[in-house]
Amino acid sequence: MSTRFEEIVRRHKNWVYTFAYYSLGTKEEAEDATQEVMMRLWNHVDSLRDETLGAWLRQVTRNACVDLARRRRSYAARVVASGEIEGLSQARSHEPDPATVAERAELRSHIESALASIREPYRSVIILREIQDLSYDDIAETLQIPLNTVKSYLHRGRRMLRDQLKRCMAL
Amino acid sequence: MSHHTNISCSRILESVDAYIDDQLSGDEVARFEGHVANCARCRHELALARHVLKETRELPSVPCPDEVTERVFVATVGPRSAHERLGRWLVGRRWRAVRLATVAGAAFAVFFIAFLSRQHTPEEEFSQAEISEAQAAVRWTFAYVNEVSWRSGLAVRDEVFETGLVDPVRRAVRSVIEVEPDTKRNHNGG
Image (cartoon, rainbow over the protein chains, first blue to last red):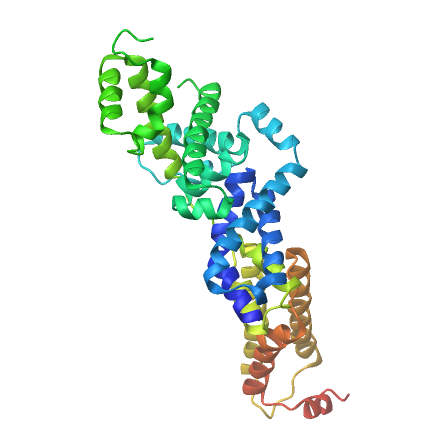
């Protein structure tokens, strides 16, 4: 049991953490959510088949993030008020042109903030589709909604993201 | 209503993402493109949508810190095996400088003992001062590793101490000095 558990954790930890990071907006909360997901995995690993593992993990990850965000409702207000959250932008400095780097870093930082502040389920759909490159079918399975609803949520979510960015930046 | 075509800007703005995702019918695409070709505002919105989408899709995957999985493993399957823990501890990113200092301290203890031993043939006795100095160096090293592991929050278990530090020091002492503990005590008059 423990070996399989460890393998699953190693294989999926970055996926879980990435979703949690973009969903919640801070590394600390992403760590909490990831730990929560892995503990739930430990409790259910015996009953999970390999074929259903991915969908189960995605659902549990998303639910853990939604629960955590709900418990910390003040987060969205904090993000909107500050206009910026701790992000990876500072770490992305490998590109040659400093002006371009700065501009992109600023935009990405605002995208991260905007993402964390738009409401569910639009936020999850955008992260799953645009950042984690899941198929529409997998997103529908994860969120347990019809395929057409996924597409409609995705488009509405993108509009929300752009509107949020327009409020933060002169776009 | 835009004067450019018989479709309003608001309808165009609602269709931007469907257009980007190729989800419009042939007629809808023609109307969309006809409008956008003549409407600067909608052209700007389309360019903005593409730009934001591109940047969003390029947001990187974020690696999960080792500490998170370590905490999970400790709470579930128990602490890692001694060698694996030592290996992870040595190559991990946290407290790299302190770890390097610790390893340097352990190496110092081993080489200090080796250096002292080279000053003597096996038959020669060590002075009390030399033995005390060697013992102090080893005690300092172990105490320092204890302190480091406490500060870094990574517990170094007894067997890790045993295999990672005590054994190498013991081997170094025995291989170079070739003095059994009982004999050494006799030398010290203990």
